[in-house]
Length: 240
Image 1 (cartoon, rainbow, N blue to C red):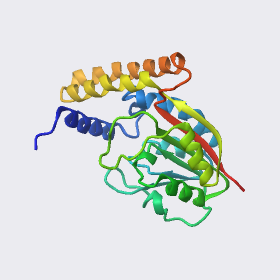
Image 2: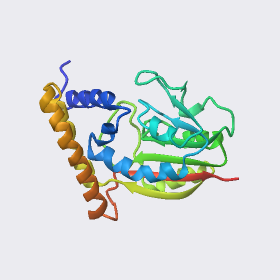
Image 3: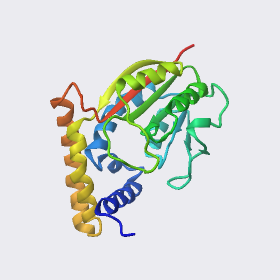
Image 4: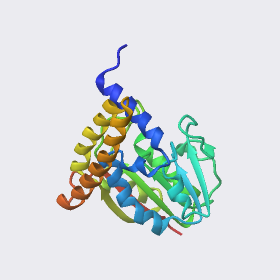
């Protein structure tokens, strides 16, 4: 079956993401990424400590940033396809003993888990009492990683899920909004179309990085209520 233009652009976007994983350029590939890392940076610096689990690490895009503040970094993913994790396993049945992590970081994973409430209970189980969870999840997003794309989350839904798992929410903040969501489209299309043309593509990447920063900056200042929040970031503590 011939792939649609959308499918070809999406596949190329994944290729480019793999090529830039581990580099700062990864977070400037589009306004969606720029707005998320902009909001995450101070929270990682403030809350990441001790033994840290990167739950659903994927290509380990955050490995270097988390390791900077961790005594020990452990990555977990359900597959070894994108990058070899420390441990292969599912968020629905984490292969760790109770209370063995000081911090759990879980970014843009919960929408791909068919039982998010169970996943959060598992995260709470492996956290030490007083341990911290930094969680990000989409409120506004296109279909991706199909067919394993199950949910979108409001701030109220995330608060409920965390409380049900025994996690005390300290903060929920939006990351990005409608501007970042719309700004993602030209970023992804431009990269996909120009990727086969090396010098032109390199020039576009520089311009796109500036575009991503600018849109994320404007988004933060123009629509402060974030009714159209792109993502939410949750900081929660395990009670006890």
